[in-house]
Image (tube, rainbow, N blue to C red; front, side, top):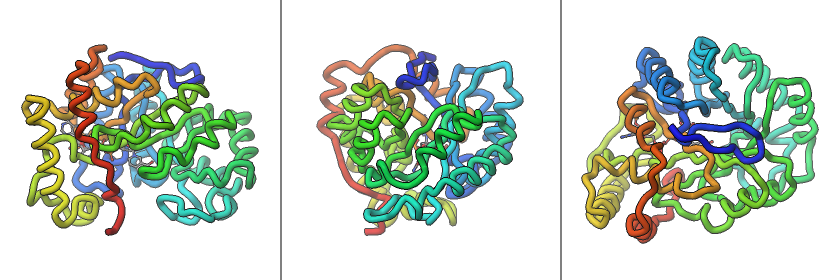
Length: 323
Ligand SMILES: NC(=O)c1ccc[n+]([C@@H]2O[C@H](COP(=O)([O-])OP(=O)(O)OC[C@H]3O[C@@H](n4cnc5c(N)ncnc54)[C@H](OP(=O)(O)O)[C@@H]3O)[C@@H](O)[C@H]2O)c1
């Protein structure tokens, strides 16, 4: 496992981080706690030292906290997230920060997350949505500063709204944020345009989410793929979307001249090739996926030709949207 600086935090984080949404039994169905615990331990054994969870991920904070406490001898960093008080994902335009992240809500939620996880502090607390309209307004900034001072959180980050990578640049420029979390993958390449250069310039850590396109870039989504009832992917991959994904993946794999099984590795390398990226929090619920993804962090980069090929397969769209 290779490690990188998380912006100017002084933390050195594993290139492959652990995305712990799927293990919480909230929006993803069928993870078992036994397998999740085994996967987390295997990840730590293989050098993963960064885990991303959230108050909104069902049992995830509890499971992550218990494994991290058990592994007290290993330095493992945990990032969690505060949900917006109005419960709206992503944050629409025109909201007052008093509706989304008032200080009393931030404080109460962080305390709940600490209780659920059994941890004494979080390395990073992120707002689960963000709008640059909130810069300079509300009492969120002084609350974050107070929580840092009290030792409940070490660093502050935001999770950028889906496919709106520019909607955090004003915040980055204020110097008040330590990390951003963003959707960036072989299909959704837009962060390369403005966000990543801005993070580099201001020393902000970049946590990449959905590097495997919620499974689209694993080769496992094909026409007719279905998911268990209650799984959020029923909406994300509904209608003819699996068939669209299959066509795109087949074209990409053919151009790269690889077996589809190699696609997750190539997709993770594509985002890791950007030096502004600190860690890629792959969603992993099994030991198998942990082992395969951890193996990607070996210091090797894509060839210039492979990178150019992936770039040609850019496909910007928003499957989180209802239409
Ligand atoms: N708004 C937000 O802040 C937000 C939103 C989304 C995600 N996140 C964070 O980002 C993390 C990553 O996103 P995600 O989990 O939604 O999506 P993702 O990482 O793009 O994809 C996860 C999917 O890829 C599969 N997978 C992983 N490694 C694989 C491999 N080597 N071979 C084949 N399949 C593989 C997983 O399989 P299994 O299902 O078998 O495990 C899962 O179905 C989340 O866990 C969460 O921590 C944050």
